[in-house]
Image 1: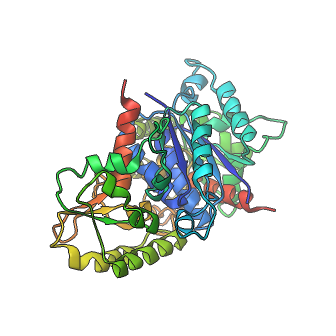
Image 2: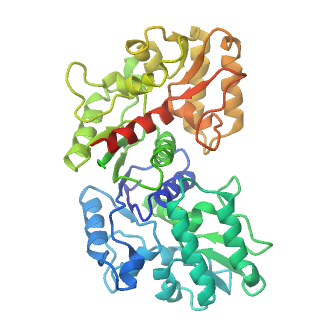
Image 3: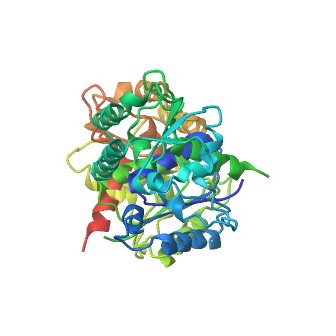
Length: 223
Length: 223
């Protein structure tokens, strides 16, 4: 099996949640995992808003460092960070999260993307899902506030899941699936014993973190 | 805050469980965490039985590597690995797990140590808890088999907790607390929302992984 490298900390709780999913996807036969959980990587949201430092150089340096230490499959469990995924050249081992997650969404014609400001305002998933849909600007704002609150909370709570349910309630008949396209949202949505998200009133909810974990583990197991 | 280094993989699921506890102990304000989860570190049990390679050099090399990369507080979330903790010299940033966990046990005069073969046969906790007690050889054997089974399972199950409860049932009136002195046992015992283990028929159950997580986070926060 190949060594997995994880550049995390965007945010920390989401990275640890992703590790749990990675381990669930892998079962008892676990590859070596090198992780750099660095909460000081500059905010992706502030950078997109033009109010903060560009996180790109730090993300690429972190990936280079993991690769130098022997990581062969590199995961960055943060959708927004993929606004800085190198275009036109190979990602040098960095497995593209929106691309990998989109593979799992092919059976749903209309998917609503629930994500952070960087993911949504850059239409990150539209490159891989031509019919990707988004919430209204007001509802997206509510999602951004929810993500900020999740980053500040000590532990997941059902109250947060209820807030998310309230925001997306009116869209459930106008799509075939919801995508949790922010790893903070992945923390709060309830799952079954196999780690799959519970549906929302019959509409499937797909977790980008879980789909990415499965793709990363599959890549680590490739010959 | 100081950078935390984690040498894990002994076993992988226990390391990821420890990371969750570390994050719970830290709250939203998380330090940088460097992790090397290396499932290929030789078995501590086989080494103690004289049937396997000495894991000591690999453990010490892993710690040295984490330190070189900037880790200031080093955690090895595996009790048995502490049979190789360097005696007589400073642990070079490696926070001694049995010593840290024993601090949290001072209020219990009689503690029964539930651990793996290396931890139990070397009386690892007796250096720090003079009245540490152990199960009968037969019951220890049952614990070792349980630990092996936990390492092989895809995810924690209540059936495993029930097996542990059955083994320790007859000791509950002869001690003041049980210590889960193997991080595999820490995975299966049920906890409350704050991450503390549920008691067993009124007798406290203390989790070495959780106590170590709190000690590591406290150390990272020291000036």
